[in-house]
Image (cartoon, rainbow over all chains, first blue to last red; front, side, top):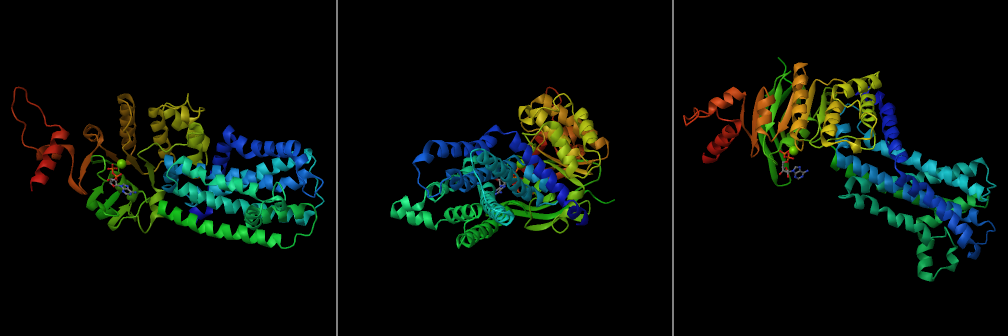
Length: 256
Length: 252
Ligand SMILES: Nc1ncnc2c1ncn2[C@@H]1O[C@H](COP(=O)(O)OP(=O)(O)O)[C@@H](O)[C@H]1O
Ligand SMILES: [Mg+2]
């Protein structure tokens, strides 16, 4: 209906404003999505970094892409949590029985996920700069980095949507993200894969995080990116599409 | 006159569980209609179908003349749902909850609407506290207030007083009566016979997937055998009528 379509952006704005309030009022969320990654960065750079041989003289430069991915992976677990709580407490049904763009109830969470992760990414980059992160990259490589991170966030957000829409308990809604948070540790995010035992190394070199981290690292340091960027994009897009389809199926099961 | 709700032959199953086995009823505009049934009778299922949250398997339902299955957008323009469990945002304050709904209803003066409703539901003092600190009765009041934003013509209240203390229950009753006094149609479900007796112009009893009675309280009372003259004469309560009807059906 015309009026419903006309107000789509208004409705989305209300939804996003609401979940952003949820984020800023939850100390727990802020600690997990911003403080923890920053603390991890401090720990790796100032405690462990001296012992890690990366072949790059600036360890912050080496580390930053992986830290960003960890922050995003923690961030989307809260997307699943918020979605689950909305379904649980009946507010989702209230929205669905109102004359609003129906999809706003779901897409509001997706947009919030993008906005809030963008905020934590910017915050972490800011701290990294204070810690000595430097990039020689121009505008285009930075745009490519923004693009990859956005796709990565969207892909994980739709995985979070599946969890939030189909979980039976809060723990179930959040638990799916733990493996995602751990993936960067078994990748080239913190140490080069060459130092790993062969089985681990094979896994590390062929899982999505490594190619994404390598692509971002190369873009930021002005190195040739090679194939990594395409493999990274394929991973992000592939996960995004599959997760979106499954999330939509779970959504249809919940809503008429 | 056009009816607020018209339901014909409504059927619904969850897998093998046949919950609604052909439901028919009508609700007059401006009246209070109570759907009475025990826990698990299918009251919420009917509310969910009428509020476009669930599709029926058979039969038709129209709300304000619009078919719920084919014209859900039109149905949603004129209704408001207060679900069985208070659907409020616990992290926001009471005021923010109301303003949010007013924005979603695209009203021009969300703050004013929120202020008025807070006052009307005696929530002004708690307006700027987060809802998770509210009592059960306050939550329910906020929940109903949120449903009144934008003055919908038809309000669904699914067991509005379940879980409330007697004081909270009386407050909700007062609100419902005021609503109907202002011309709003109220469709409410309840497990409490007394509640239906107190509020409703018309009472329908849902039992084992069918409407087994649908009339005014007076007519319902007539269905019952005349009061027995015992030591003191006692009017049959709705509870007795209910049991009598169920008893008769099961004897058939
Ligand atoms: N989504 C569902 N899936 C399976 N069974 C359900 C579902 N919703 C309700 N039921 C069952 O249908 C019956 C009627 O439920 P409901 O309409 O909620 O009853 P009431 O609101 O009168 O208590 C109950 O036996 C309930 O367990
Ligand atoms: Mg119910």
